[in-house]
Amino acid sequence: MTEETATERTVTEQMRTSTGGEALVRALAAHGVSTAFGIPGTHNLEIYRHLAAYGITHVAPRHEQGAGYAADAYARVTGDPGVAITTTGPALLNIAAAVGQAYSDSVPLLVVSPGMPLRHPRQSTGLLHEMRSQTEALRNVAAFSHRVSSVEEIGTAVARAFSLFRTERPRPVHIEVPLDLLEATEPAGPVRRAPLVAPRAADGPSLDAAAALLAGAVRPGLVLGGGARGAAEQCRALAEQLGAPVATTANGKGIVDERHPLALGVSLHSPSVQKWLADCDIVLAVGTELAESDLWSTPPALDGRLIRVDVDPAQMYAGLPADVALVGDAQATMQALKERLARVPGPASTDAATRTTAAVRASRDDETRARDARWVPYLEAIRSVLAADAVVTSDSAQCCYYGALPHLPVGPEGRYLHPTGFGTLGYALPAAIGAKTASPDRQVIAISGDGGLQFSVQELATAAQLQLPLPVVVFDNGGYGEIRDEMAARGDTPAAVDHARVDLAGLARAFGGRGAPAHSPGELAALLTRALATPGPTLITVPEETA
Image 1: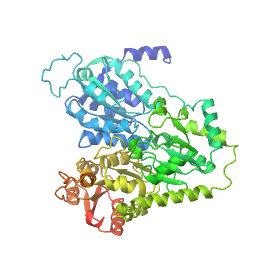
Image 2: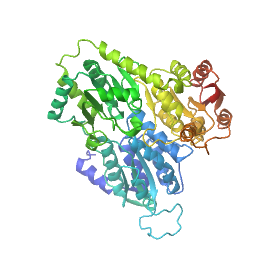
Image 3: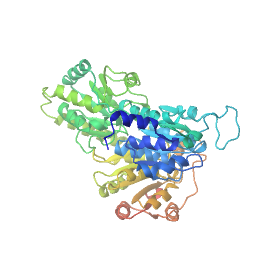
Image 4: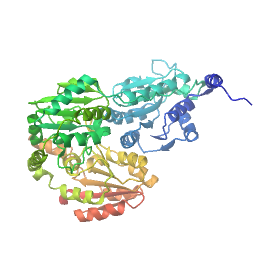
């Protein structure tokens, strides 16, 4: 038997036929997808038929929004795109909030769904899950929504999505396959794979200009966002060489160890940190929008010059315009910048920068000491139990953005996942499931408030079925504490923010997990230690009166 030639293989692939469902799963597997999150429905069964044959493990959350958050966290932890499968209509709309969150936080999330048949009339016919346009709905929250028109086009659509993930600012994508094409058998064509592209640094003249500014800096400062995560080593080394304090956004939390003497942590919302930032003569901002969601206010006017590093050129003139724009991959750009500065002598001593950092930290903590004191002892107890590489997921809850973000230190080996920008509720629990699926050997813990938890509390059943050792710490203030406080600050009578107390620990047991209250930091540490070694979720409530 003669060996098959490349030409013969190409012809064979071009002649190959398959259903649209198999073509989709084959294309996902060709791009290295090994895990998908989703819920089967009447219209997407042909996708599910082929998952196992192509080596794709499936995780079934209890709600499509949970599937989206789990896939989002999977992407953040692994660096690979997260994949979620929905059916038509309401299922796709259920995941739309998660798609919006992934767009806000620059997360590579691929959502695949069936759509109305290829030749479905524009006029309503009453078909199951019918809606006017799924692609139009998703186009408004995703980078793009691609409705294919043939089985062969499916591979092209998937390759297009992965090309975006690899070469542009990573953002969510939706691919819709008409439900009749999922079942139709047509020529599938050869497997199309998105090309691998080497990360590119910013151009040389811009790097030279940035290096010259940094070499002459007297009061430099670094601001790191989620886009700087791949450049953690370079950012730390540059901060040390320049003697520059480092602040991060929520998505940049832990890129530089928050116990480092130059680290200001997640504190851009602090008036003291904003004053420090405004007083810097050179600010180097890496992979961040410098947006209101990072600063909790409009960006402060800077007295000095601003150097911005971002893969997205549009960011250079959003918010605070760059004086020097470094458009390129953060790691490649920061490495090139580090090399240009290697021969520039650093400060004789970093003592002055360390003293500045300590003073700004102290002033920052004084601003919020009375408010944050209720969470800090419990967060210290959590930190004492967790390994350095643990993953913490959080919610849009006071205990998280006032508590854990600034007061639970994380280093570059760990991760803290928070729904910034879009600010969805219900993220923490399903995100923890996605993170634990991605890294089963790492400790994972979710932190939430009682209001946020109840947006996705049904995912306790998912964690129980998967037997994931998953502590869920819930600070229970009996409702929506942030909105209650905002109403009171306006002089309004709080309305619709106080909830009847729910036995959350009992609810966890009903879902197949465990639950108990923690009335002291020591009790929380003991319960956490046990929960991290116990299969299934353990929900630990910290009642407001003891928090």
